Amino acid sequence: MEDQIPQLRNALTVFLKSLPVGVKFNICSFGSRHSFLWPKSMPYDQVNLDIALKHVQTFEADLGGTEMFPPMEDALKKRYKDLQTEIILLTDGAIYSTEPLFDLVQRECDGGDVRVFSLGIGDSVSHALVEGLARAGRGYAQIVGNDDKLDVKVVRMLKAALGVHVKDYKLSFSAAGSTSSATTTKSEHDGDEAFEMVEHEESSAPASKADEAKPQPTVISLYDTSASADADPEPPTSQDRFAHLPALEVPTRIQTPHRIPPLYPFSRTNVYVLLSGSEATPGAITVCGTTNSGIGLELQVPVKDVGLGTTVHHLAAKKLLQELEDGGSYLHSGEFGVDPKTEPGKFVDFGERGRESRHNVWSGRKVDKFCSCRNGGTEI
Image (cartoon, rainbow, N blue to C red):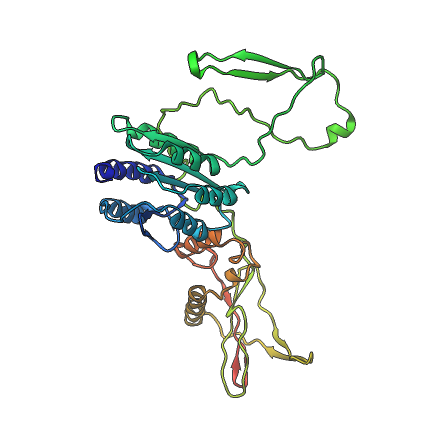
């Protein structure tokens, strides 16, 4: 293994520097034991890239023998279940029992949201392991020999891993003489890489009105004449690592705390309501609640206009930031765009995007009004 460590470092360095903005990534080192660089995958930015590159340079052959099942199982458990995941495994050796590993990978990759690619390094790597793992993981395998050019194969694999997931490949057949016939043409490649292209002739029969009314799905060719196996990865169209996120629905009212805590006599509770510019200042606010026995409670509190200022806004912002950190804000409720329980991966990105906003961490919009009303020991 020691002979392959420099090549392993080079491969990982190429992988890391070729990742596009917006993905999440992690590194797992494994041998007779395994460890992750971070507990969960982190967003790809310059800070995390520098940390990962420094980590790779510390790699040595000091983890004992080769055990792949525990780290693979752990990686699959730690992944964000709401995000499609690519696992790229680099190895220069072999393991005694491959069936449990293959069964695990095949089971986890069967749904189409996870793919496993394997890159074998060196002349003594087990081809059966590398190829079998990629076959079970619905990815593909490559072997980099001692004298092979590493960069080309690494970039080629990364380009494949970053490709769109397609779950339902299938074949269809046309009978001879049917309205949609298939013709074949030889490709321009020769030798072992020659293949046939299948071209379907469009039917000249007019479509029925019912068929015309149905929305037709977009169909593109699987064969891309502009593709090159050795081309460098295309640079990302945007340097914004949050470009893949949809616009977040911005409520006209933002309440903090989002979930009002229990109210007690002679104990003051502050609830802030941030209003957008289009929201009129209410004349009164009604506080409602329900007891365990089903009895409704209600109290109407008049709103008092205290004029313009910034102090109360700062207090509201501080409270909202605290809720964001504690995981109890309106964003965590799942009512405004993304649910952290079902989409934890996207939610992390939404939170990061919010924290990087220069003007306002909760919506990116100016807050024009603040409601304050008082009744006894409770201020809202």
